[in-house]
Length: 252
Length: 202
Image 1 (cartoon, rainbow over the protein chains, first blue to last red):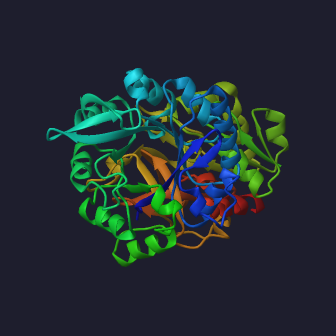
Image 2 (image 1 turned 120 degrees about the horizontal axis):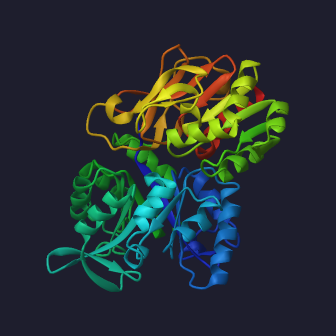
């Protein structure tokens, strides 16, 4: 039986993992790839890296880090951050990424989903979308959640999937950082809308939040989180055990 | 030495790294002499069947693989590489494969029942049906990482493991010196590496 995936997300700046890593005192945080090994050993089903660097030098450091990680971490790796062209796809895929996540690049380059799906297959192309409620409707935000595009999120998701996105990461700005659970309402709408895997992001504060997600949104494929894992507020082995106890298929 | 066939289909970075990690002496190559001198062959592949089959045919690598397999050399097909071992595929038309195993490749949409996502993407557990050398270090129920929209339907008893996804979907095949896995052992953590390791030692 196919399992529900648990995915830690790591922000990388200038080749270093940032945000919350100081809480992970058991690993050598100077070496980001050992952090990746730590998560792999604790049972993560996949890893997501967001490159939050702006400079070209930083991008090079990121791909060096990615290649070093992919040399010793043998689970699927998704990479996002600053992906605006198929050249960006090529740059990270050649260093060991399995999937590439496109966020605001989809607005800057409207043909990117089609082009990338044609070249690398839908399974390789991930839509990452930041969503916030505005006047009762769901809107797409870009620039790290600061800018309202005015575009309806459900319409946008539907369009990107029909253009070739083979997976969707939905990050709810409304629940992100609040740690009171995932955005069940939004996620339910999205899984009903598309027939590709949907990954929930934003709001996880405890193992129970993941259980609630998988129980209330049975169509969801995975739960993604950052700080609750980095701060060890949720340990992946414990979470997987709780999932199994609640009858949710988990890779243990 | 293991020859990983480089025929311009998919990214071989992870596979090369995983073979290195288990201490295998392997080389990514399209050199027919190197392939002929190798102890074993791995045929990887991601993408469309028709395009990959054409590349194997036009490069002559398909014939080399068939000759070497006929001589008894061990061969492992991974993902699309496994599908290419079969006679034909119904992915966008009908395309001829290497024909080393009897059977065909069909769309998952025809093979599964129920409302399930396609591609079949994620971790699924193996139900091992045959005592194959590639499973020497693998427990029944081990989780492997799958990404595919088509699946093989073997006809000559080569099925070695299936996984449950709206039916019994071929996960691995094994017949004499010819092996294949639909999942990606190079992306399936330690349990995936164990399968590669068992193939190297087979």
